[in-house]
Structures are given as C-alpha cells and as structure tokens.
Length: 392
Image 1: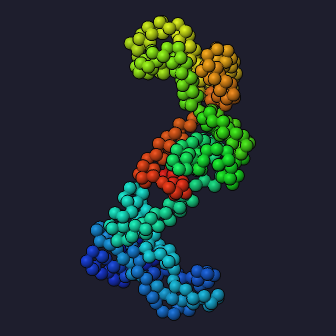
Image 2: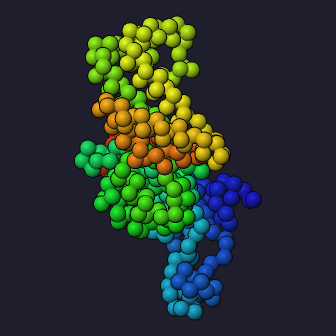
C-alpha cells in the first residue's frame, strides 16, 4: 500500500499537493488506475484534456477535508460516447466520497441529530438526511434475506395512533427480524403476503393465540405447522384465574401482595410466602381447589424438550384438564376451556418445539427504543428500513 493510499484511504490515487486554509485541508490528487468507458466498458479511448472535481472527504481531526481530483475527459472510440473519468470511492454526480457519507450515516445512526451534524460537517440538514437514507436503504437490501426463514415468529406491535399496529416477522433460528408489515388483519396483510417469496419453505410458525394470525398462516404458509407461544398461554390461564378469583372473593382479590402470590408458580414462592398463601386458601376452600388446578395445568404446559412418546402421555392429561374447565360451571373457567380446546393442537406442539416468541418480544423492546430515539415515525418505510438494519 502506497503512502497516498494510506493518506486518502482510497486505492490507486497519487497525491500531488496539500494545502491548508483556515479550518480546511485540500488534498490534490489524481487517479492512476485503468480507465474504461462507463457505457460499453471499452478501453479504446481518446483523451480530450483534464477537468477538476472537488469532493468532500474525511475530516482531519477538527479540520474539514476536501479532495481536489484531476480527472480526464475522454471519448470512447467503440461507442462514440463522451464521458468524464469515473473514480473509485466516489459515486457519479455526488459531491462527497463514499467514506464521508458512511461517516455521516454512522454518526446520525448513533444519535446525533441532523442540524447538529450538518453544522459540524459544513453541510445542510437535508444533505445529512439524504446520505443517511441512501446508506440505510443499501444496508437494508444487503441484510434482508431474499426468502422466508424456515422457523418464523409472528407477533404484533404498536406503530402510531394514526396508522395503528404493525406485524413483525422474526427469524427465530438466526435471531433477527425478517421483515415488518403495516397492519395486523388478514385484509391489511393480504397484498404483502401475496408478494412474499419462499413461503413454501416455512416449516414452523410460532405465534400467540390470535385467530387472525392463525387463519393467515393456514392460508399463506400451507407447509408450516403452528406452535403456540408458551408465555401467552400461561398468561391467558392466569388472566382467567384472576378474573374468577375476583368473582369468588371481590374484597380479598384487591390485596396487591396477595395477588402477587397468586400469580406466581410454586417454585418461585419463599417459605414464609407459602405459609401466608396457604392460610388464605384455607379460608376459601373453593378457591383452593381452583388454585391447585391452575398450578397443575401451568406445570403441565411448562414442560419442554419432550419426545414423541413422552408427548403421547402428556396429551391425555391436557385434554382431561380442558374437559374439567369446560364443565366447571364458572364463566371465566368455561371461556378458558373453550379457548384451550380450540388451540389444543398448537398448544400440544409446545412440548416438542424448543423456541418461543420471546425473541420477537425482545426485538419489540428494541423497536420501541428506535422509535424513541427518532422521536417517532410518520413514514412507515423509513421505520421498516431502520428496523431491518438495526435488528438484523
């Protein structure tokens, strides 16, 4: 690597002069590499002189860097086209080098706002935005997988009050966001899903107990099996149990400490907490029966990494529990039994499938951070590209 290449960070350049004027350093250079016609790629050229091209380049400390390039004007003898020499590291019709634009993109991505960054670099805020969007789109095209992943996680998250919710498609195998689409209903996602490539390759879809998403998966991912997300199933059971508790004991259910104990699993209770809970349940025998039933059902659904033979032994236990819920006579427990019955196949697959939609929920936290840092988004496409880059 020559001294000129080390100085500029660009290959096959020859530095001819350097000049400092105030807070600006101007480097005069000439490209010494091969020249070819940008139209036909021919090398039979007739040179017609030189022209100068001033390019904004990387800063030297607190001094702004200007690259003063001397480029040839040529005519191609093969196609007859006149052109100015193309040089590496500088795109056509651009007034800044690729390395400078990449630096602006990275600093704006790190949180420096457009106006402040523009004042530092001596460019306008609109130019900062243009550089940022250009590199963001390029990164999104590079990082976005061309086809759907084999293991897909689907969940919704809030976008804006005006545009509502968006749907997240997560690659659970590689722990990355595959894509984000606006809307959460089948009608809103229809056009997006019809244009989606590689839907036949999807084998497993993990999702919460959303009927709309289940119909979407059955229609657009015919080769995939649906697996219910364990967290949402346990949360649904706790929700109906607490609602039933409020009907049985309206006064006792308002005790915040007692509610915290009722929500937890047995293994998360300390000895003194167990004693307080047992003393309360002894005063309400009906609630004691429901609580113990809820604990047995939750521990049954918390089992993981089971073989097919082990699952065959667990399925009858689960189905008996569903029947007991539907025959309990309590409105909340009957509604819970109906929901578990309609999702029985998807819930039973949790014992074999090792991953959950917790990966997707974690990315939702990161998306909220991205939205806060940007002070909200109005353009969904900008939001989508930023999520694809930062959550890849």
